[in-house]
Length: 102
Ligand SMILES: [Zn+2]
View 1 (cartoon, rainbow, N blue to C red):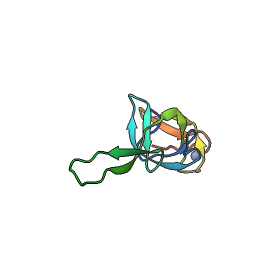
View 2 (spheres, rainbow, N blue to C red):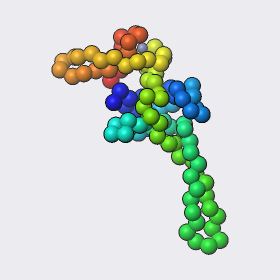
View 3 (cartoon, rainbow, N blue to C red):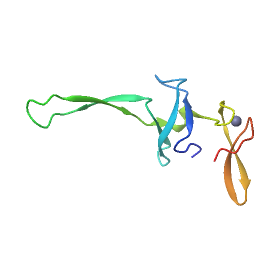
View 4 (cartoon, helix red, strand yellow):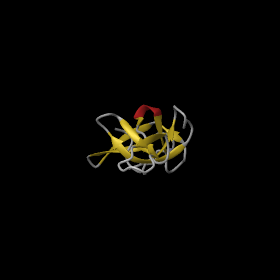
C-alpha cells in the first residue's frame, strides 16, 4: 500500500474529484482509504425510542486507493510514489523532488 495514515491525498474520481484531504484510515486488504471530510455519505440512523427523531449523519466512505494520489509534503504536487532502499528499509520517495516521504 502506497498510501498511509496522515498522508495528504488528492481525489481523482467521484463527486469530490480534485479535492485534497488527510488520510484517516487505510484498509490495505481492501485497497481502500478514508479521507477526512471527503466522499461523505449520508447515513440514516433509526430511532430507538418513540418520539425520538431519526438522525442523518455524514460519514466519510472509503475510496479505492487507485482513485487518490499522494500529495508530496515537500513540493506540494500530486505524485506517483517511488521507492528507495535505505539502510535495509524501503522508503517512499517523491519522484519529482526526490524527497523521502516516510
Ligand atoms: Zn516532491
